[in-house]
Image (cartoon, rainbow, N blue to C red; front, top):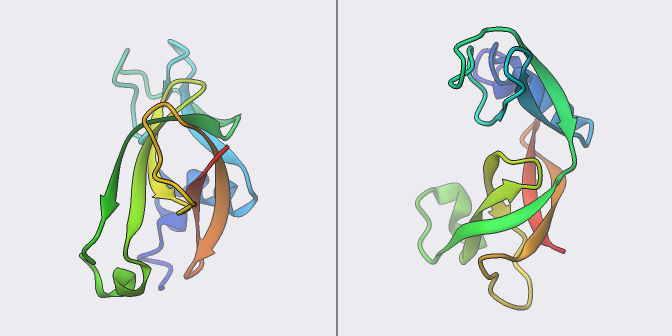
Length: 131
């Protein structure tokens, strides 16, 4: 992947991917109103401040919703069917989407999960494992 297309170099989200490559989960923190947010934005949707920092958060949460895909919507995913994507509410508040490691059973809303960091074509990403 070229540097110009890699999310690692994105001016808004790049620090998230750089932290994930180091095995850390970060979200944006508004220095004006203390709101934590994901996805990253240039300004705070709560108070409109642009005074933002990235903060490390504990990479754990609860499954809020999930879907199991039985059809590949991308040729790259054809060999991974079925796969599960979960919406996880982090313990600190924000929600993140991510692939769920397929286990011996289907997940359930309310299951506790831990983040795992993995490299996909040079971009670190998160996937979730039932705790």
